[in-house]
Amino acid sequence: MIKKLILTTLTIIFLLSPILIFTEQNTYRQEFLKWLNNDSRGRRYLGYEDFLSGLFDSAAKEGIPAELLMNKLREGAAKNVPPQRLIAALSKEQERLKTARGILEDYGIKFEKTEDYYDTLKHLSIILLGGVGEETLRNLIDISIDTSPGTSVDFNVVLLACDVLVQFNSIDILTQDEMYVLGKSLLLSKLKPAAYSNLASLYLSARARRVRKTELLKLIETTLLHGGGLIQLDQEISERYRKR
Image (cartoon, rainbow, N blue to C red; front, side, top):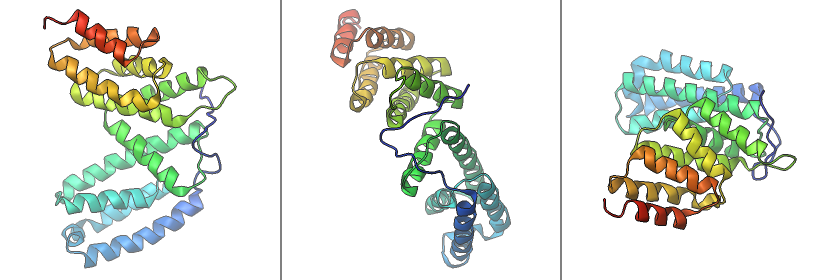
C-alpha cells in the first residue's frame, strides 16, 4: 500500500497540471525548432526533428516538463554527442523522469514553486541513473514514514541518503538489497543528514585498505543501527583491519 508523505521542507501546494504541461510544451516546441534551425550545434540534429518532436509530445502526455528534456538535449549537443546516442539518452531520461513523477504523485509530494518541482525531478532522475532502483527508493520512503508516525517527514533526507547510495555504487557495484540495507541504516541512524556524505569517504578509504565489501557493509549496518557514528565506525575499522 502506498503511503502518503507529509513534508517539512517542500511545501505542499500542487503538481503541475496537464494543461500547464501542454502549454509549456508548445512553448518549448517553438524554442526547439528555432534551436534546430538557427543554432550551429542544433543543426547537427536536423534530420531527427520528427523523432525529437515526438519525444516532446510523448513527454507532454506523461506530464514531464519539456524544460528538463530541452536542457538535456542542449547539454548533449554541447558535448557533440552523436544524434542516435543523444536520442537514446533522451529516451532513457524521459523514462526516469516518468518514474520520478510517479513517485511524487503516489506519495502526494507537491510543490509551491515550479523550480523546486523540477529540481526534485532531476534529483530523482540522477538517483535512478546512479543505480538506485525504483522499488528500493520507494521502500526507503516508506521507512521514513514508518519511523515518523503522526509527524512530518523531510523528503530531502531520503534524497540525501540515496545520494550516498549512488556514491557507494560508484565505488563498488551494490545489489538492490545492499542498497536498501545501507539506506535503511542511514535513515534509522543517529547521524545528521548533513554528515551522510562523509560515510562514502570513509568507505572509500576502507576499501583502499582492501577491506572486503561485504564485511564493510555489515560493519556499517551494525554500527549505525546500534547508535554509533562515523568516529566509532572509523575506530572499528582501524581496530579490526589495522594489519591490512
